[in-house]
Length: 358
Image (cartoon, rainbow, N blue to C red; front, side, top):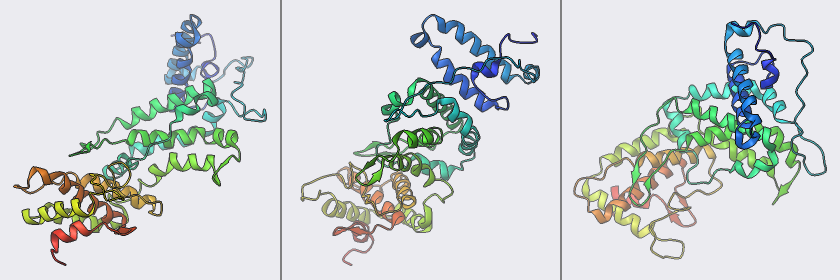
């Protein structure tokens, strides 16, 4: 075994001498992207070789002990120029962010591994049908090095997330399969840890409609995760939702028919009275802004789980979609407490099913 790789691996990877395995891997993945021939051309081949050697040395305990006394005269790498915010003030480069937040990133990755099944299910459906922030839009402003760090972190989050299998996703008539988006939610939270300082520095006090843009972005990146963890499967109203699920699974045929028909009459129309198989945004669920995020996420998961309830034998094919929508809606409002809004009685279909004529 050679006594030295011939260069300082810490400098090549741009990590501190106390960097652990996670930080080393993140730094390697970010910098190996920069060495790709599409980015660095032919010179990238030699750069990639040095990066591979540096990573191997820092991940091997025996070889790393030989680096306890690094060459004192080793030159520090030039600091990346990074992007500039308006007004010409420079924001910190990528390495500053990674070093500053390495412990927090490492702790978050560990928190992904510690998720219990109910927490993971909440994370998976926490977005509902809301579109997540597209960080690709900020690529030009982040600059190549910070963007590479962001992509390396994304890869690491994906590696950790996929160590655990998700619950099978249900399929709902009219909607298709409800796909879990937990990996996306986890990555958004991790990206905010890495990029918060950059965004707050770059965006400054920029306001849109009286709201700081940086605060709005922070809310969209972190709320789905924060509202999902450390809660029971259906949140504060877990018991009420469980009672409903048991009752819905035991509905007799005549009650299921009343539920489906009542949903089609009372909920299967849009605000102008036109026939519609949707309520709320898209074909999802009512989601006014005054519902706390913890309850809203609880409602999303309750609706997903209610989609797994099979209609009783004998229910006509023409009523099955409305049955599923009615059960999903009732599960959602049971979890959120959103029983009515703007003149719409969201529990009407369920009440007609179990208490006809009431």
